[in-house]
Length: 453
Image (tube, rainbow, N blue to C red; front, side):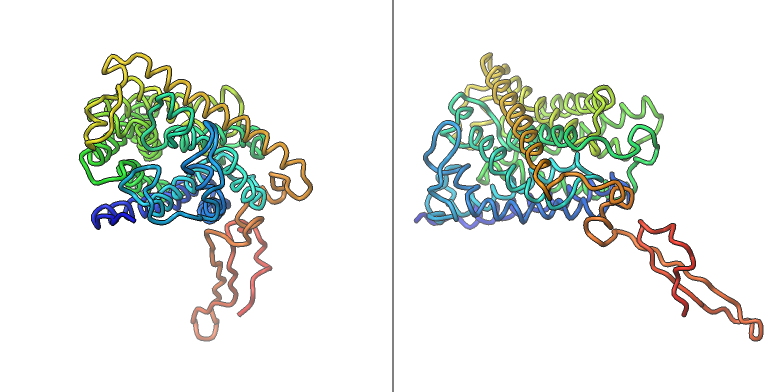
């Protein structure tokens, strides 16, 4: 059993924690963009993704994705229930034990469904969503991750490049969210009401900060070692996010003449998504181009939901689906040999920057296959689930109007205390004579419901 250098163990453990932090970060990002009566439910759905997929990863997810043998399509169950997963060299790196690689990759697997369920915001039932996460991770995420990251997968054999999850994480979650939105249908009043606006931009900014912070472990940690390649991945990740944020803000300013906080956050996430597959293959110059082009493409894609008339509540498809797809294609253009070789071991032919013209078709095949598999299999899963008694995907009309916080969780993100104050005519003193604690969903409760003190 190899002895793992302490610095490497510390680095991978830190990266694991950073990716873990992205999951509640997604929750806060989504929560702030939704209406207040659905704020808590989105945070809960995201952290539920963590626990559901962690269990799935233990049962068979890790084995299906990273078993050392398998077909070109999927792994086997040799490591089901983490049997034999301990100190042997992992499939990701000969310097990294299986157990360390397993928990790091578990965070990627747990984050992906949390991204996908954003399109179901404000109308998707919780119980079917939990079951969906388990099934989807098994039949969508695990195969796509296997194709891309397992040396036995067809995309890896073909020569596709994906450093940190452009196809397994972002394309798969983005196109799954599109399928989810189409199956669920539009929210009540969507397109006819101005009520569908972010209720708490502070949460959106907080979620963006947590995502940006965690992305250093997401991309930088994917080098699986402490070397110049990991450092470069962190540099280009930060740079692309900054360029994406500025680009989206400028586009919004041109239209609205306002410095939009939402535009800043959306652009930063778009830049982070676009740089993800390329982060271990490109230098700072291409990172600027990827951040810019990713933000422009995602900004344009936001308008697709109006043109195609579907309700992607939180623009998951536009940012993650389109951003991941564009990032994967740009990897085929900007990937360079010398960047990959910074770890002292990786050899690639590069992309168009190195006159390797075939790399772009390889990237196109990988991204398109991942998008198609995710969309059609997700659509099929949801259609079947929706026809099973007790697993209908959408809440009823009353529950949607009340909000998912009250209808599905029974708790609210916000409470308000109403008090009636009376003045004693004899003494002139003020006294609270009644009070009532109201959730955000029952602010119209008649004053007569108050409890007298």
